[in-house]
Image (cartoon, rainbow, N blue to C red; front, top):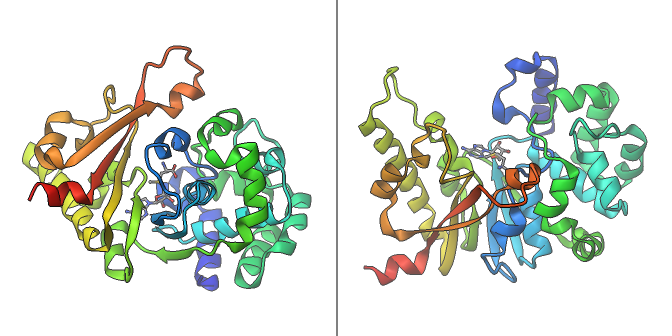
Length: 321
Ligand SMILES: C[S@@+](CC[C@H](N)C(=O)[O-])C[C@H]1O[C@@H](n2cnc3c(N)ncnc32)[C@H](O)[C@@H]1O
């Protein structure tokens, strides 16, 4: 970690008016994906994995499900020290409730980033990670941190208990005992160029919902977005995914995109438009749907919206050659 860079970035975010902070400058406290349902479609036991760092929940879930190794990436460098803060909470013996109420910045949780709890867990931080979090907690109040450093997208702890594998009693206890052994290699990198930094192969890659931001990744110089331009953007993203294939073992799988309410999504992003998606991604991709996290959040008794994982299996490509 580049301590100086992360401290300067933090100072900058903390003095920026809330509404002017850009989307991915903030850290997600917890994942807003239904990882319990999504990950049960993959066998990650003993697998070598690559995933987005984000809130670190994908990392913790993969590890709790038996992954052998986990490398990560993110365009937000502050996600790296956040991982060590969560790791320290396990080492300090926080139970699920302590953990949820310390890390959750949901309005419901008044004890978020509580200073006494930080003093307790800081004993399990070392080196630059300790220096970074000491700087943060010394200079800013929990309230300021909650409103600047962390994303406004907050999931209620009641929902998180249903959507995160590692919050299960047994898995949580297992993590408390085994997290010290988990070492994660973090790449501070954009997904668009990360493949240039890779030097090993993986069995499973999990790219979260980055695909949803195609619009910002391949901007146009003019205001009017034409159909052909949307197809161009989807094709650009598809080409980037293909850059990862050489780093995937033969039976490997890429979870190329977590798509919220695929069927009923009213967002205009091209990835949600079935005809465009099929035209570009064709038959090579599989789609697995399951109960949406927002369905759980709103406590619908009858599922009415599904989230979907868009999957590319390396062996499906070779069998169709
Ligand atoms: C896609 S976001 C949204 C939250 C996500 N659904 C979850 O559950 O964590 C997750 C993370 O992706 C990172 N991210 C977004 N676009 C990226 C890109 N082009 N390359 C690398 N990381 C990216 C953000 O900084 C953020 O930490």
